[in-house]
Image 1 (cartoon, each protein chain N blue to C red):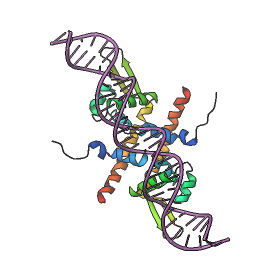
Image 2 (image 1 turned 30 degrees about the vertical axis):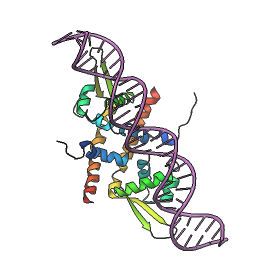
Image 3 (image 1 turned 180 degrees about the vertical axis):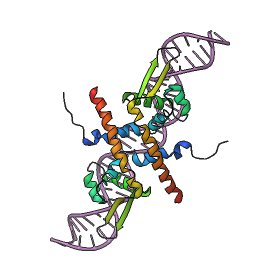
Length: 113
Length: 113
DNA sequence: AGTAAAACCAACCAAAAGGTATGTACCCTA
DNA sequence: TAGGGTACATACCTTTTGGTTGGTTTTACT
C-alpha cells in the first residue's frame, strides 16, 4: 500500500469542505432540501431553472458520492429517482443561513459606495 | 418583457459570501490572521509558501476591496504594508473551524471505503 | 556603480469549471 | 407509427481561475 503523501494543502479538511460547498450550484441544490424530504431529478430542475442538465447531473452524482445526498432509484419506466439529504448533508444546511447573513453584510457595504 | 435587472442568482447573498470564501486561497489567507493582529505582505508569503505572488496580491486586493481586510500603507522605502481583519473579516473566522469539522467527517467517510 | 529590499503589476499560458447541443433507454399513449 | 415522459451521457466549446516569468519603484548600503 503505497502511501503517496498528498500535500497538506490537498488533505486540509477546510479544502475538502470547500469542494462540497464551493462551485456555482452545490449549495443551491442542497438548499432546495430545506423543507423538502425528498426531491426528484425533475423537481430540482424546476426549482433551479437556470441550471443546465449537465451540471445538475454532475453535481447530484458528486453529492451522492461524497454522501451528502442519498439517491434512491425506483426500477420503473419511466425512471424515477429520489434524492434526499443524508445525516452529513443535513449538517451543511446551517452554513446556508450563515452565508446568507454574511452576504447581506457584504451587500450593505457595496450600496454605500 | 426583458428587464435588464440582475438575475436573482447574481444578487443572492449566499453567492456573495461564496465569492469571499471560495477560491483556492482566500480562506487560507484569512485564517492566517487567527492569532495575529496584523500581517505584512512578506509575512503572509512566508506563511503560505505555495501561493504565487500574483495570487497573494490579487486576493489581498480583493479582500481589502470587500472590506474583509484592512490595508495600512506606511509611506516608507522600502515599502511597508500591514493587513488586518476588519470587523466583517472577523466574522469569517468561525466558518473556518466549522468547515474543518465538516471536512473531517468527509475524510472519515473516504477512509472507510 | 551595482545590488538589495518590499510590495506590487502585467503579459502570457495552462487547467478547471461551466454551458450548449445532441443522443440514449424504455415504455406508454394517441 | 409517432411522440412524449424521465433521467441521464457525451462531445465540444467558452469562460473563469490559477500559475509562470519578468518587470517596476525608491532609497540605502557597499
